[in-house]
Length: 350
Image 1 (tube, helix red, strand yellow):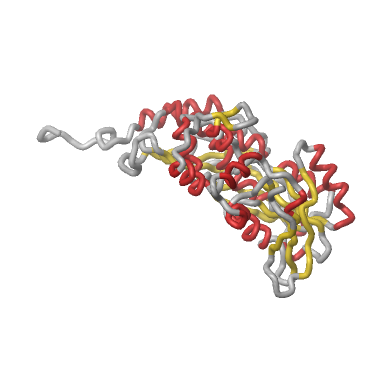
Image 2 (tube, one colour):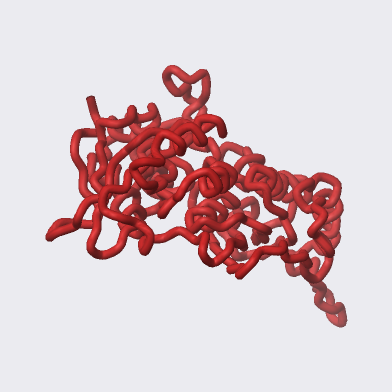
């Protein structure tokens, strides 16, 4: 810099004009913000939305990101699906309490702002909101030069807010001995465990572009398959059945997540023989991940569990099927005794 010249934001690495262009592109592409409850949406200092008329309303909030799955998206140069994962990880948590997602806000940080890339990433968030039947009410895109090792690195997160009547909330207090545990099929590994997956890819020197057997897809495509958003089917189940509790199977796998759905005096017995393991989990096992690590890290094909009274199982499974999801009985609620909150019978492998 010549003597007498002033410092500028652009010379420090932040391109305000690119940020404005990204906002312009987003306004053209986003659909979920066009909702009759929205008063002020994308582009302002904050979003404003009317509250639905729910008696004794309770707000339920959840926040998360897609973890190091974003690094696979970057490695493949695919930015259209990772935003779905970011939405799914929060709205599924909110819905697991019996609430209906109302709106979502995202946070995207990039090393260098490329408007078209940002628009594609946030368009994925918008698609996730459409699937969840909620509103993308706003968000933040930040350019952080020097924050990451490389200019094309990025990270995403966000949070969802949902609503429910207080007496409609689900949770451990409603669970009873003899309740039945239903499993809703996952689309794959969803958005957790990717630090382990990346270690396998690195150690085995695997190419993301190699074919994945029996799918017509590449290994990278299979791993990048977005997380299923269960919010609409959980809403349908709540209206059709007396749901007692639900658990979103994410980081910590079965022990951590199912254990949170039952009170201290009860446990869940999971029948591992009750479903077939999707191919991506067979690939993980063949790569050297043992059974306990699989169950403690991944969803193993069950992305959400729902606990219902035994006499509501048929009705619940009918709702799940009509909503287009795979679902089946995966276990039951039993007295805990001296054992752990989650225990197993059968085997993942047959």
